[in-house]
Amino acid sequence: MEESGKRHLATILVALAAILYFFICAFPLPKELALAPGWARAIPAPGPDLGPAGALAVQASKAGAELHTYVLPSSFGWFDTEGKGISSSPISFGAAVSDSGYIAYDRMSTVLSLKNPQGKEIAKLAQPGYPFFGGDRLFVVHPGQTSVSEFSGQGKLLWTRDFSSAITAFDASPGLALFGLLDGSLTGLDPTGQVLLSFSPGGSRIAGVYGCAVSPDGLLAAAICGLDRQRLVVLEKRSSAYRVTWHRYLESDFRRPVGIAFTADNRYLVYEKPSGLGIYSRDGRDEASIRSLPLTGLGLASSKRSILMAVEGRGESKTLLCASPTGDRLFSLPFSAPSAWPVISGDSIFLALGSTDGSSGLIRIDFKEE
Image (cartoon, rainbow, N blue to C red; front, top):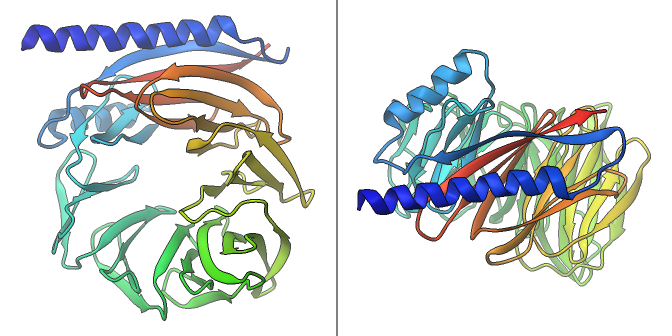
């Protein structure tokens, strides 16, 4: 059994090293941008809790390395940017994970346990439902999905809000929590639970919100809504109210949750299209497109270059795509893995990969100016 585990570990390390080599040597990039190898690490097998591995990741972050999370179908954890600390914990049903803590929950959890990255319990939340983190804030959507509560980082109940329809989409920034509802309306709440935004986009035969996003500064809100025809709506806060600043009908007819998010610099909105990615520019109030295979993951960043990242494809055949916000593909990397979790931070790319035998690994690649 031990030898089998070693073989799995060796296999995934070799695969990661091959990806690094493929990344660095196979793709020409614009003259001012180049890729440099970072590191490849095996993610430790998940234990009953994060334990010493979680403590190691936190210790590495305290030494000056930035800490990030990854979530794969069967495990989640933290890693630091230098690869000195990587933690892993199993997922039985679901897990809400942030840089500061997590809640692992079952289908019928009546009490939710909030823990820190080391696996130590911070508080018990006596609220059944489905926990989510957004904008460094913790929310629990109640069973039935028509009510939501926000809790502090120490597990204290801050407020509860009831809606007239089921919640179908959600996003949050430090100053605005946005909820898309089954009846097609959008409601935005401030940190005290008071309504800041109330809007019904309309314009479609069938109402509904299939994805929504809030810019990190809380001044922009966006949604993919309606069927026959589906629509993109972007609202901007002007004085004390949010007003429509961009809208158009789409060629999509998604009847499932749609990927949509703002970049961390607040400048771009990226959303899923049947043909790839749509990119709305806040500054230019116009759009660009990137043709792509079906998306399985979307990671966004806004370093000096506002690099966009997505995982394309289905099954084990996937591609990591990095592109500019003007719609230029910078490079594409084919790889084979049942699951992948992309993270892009500053000028570094991190990719967590999972396999069918339960083993997993992590790679880092850096952007460099030449």
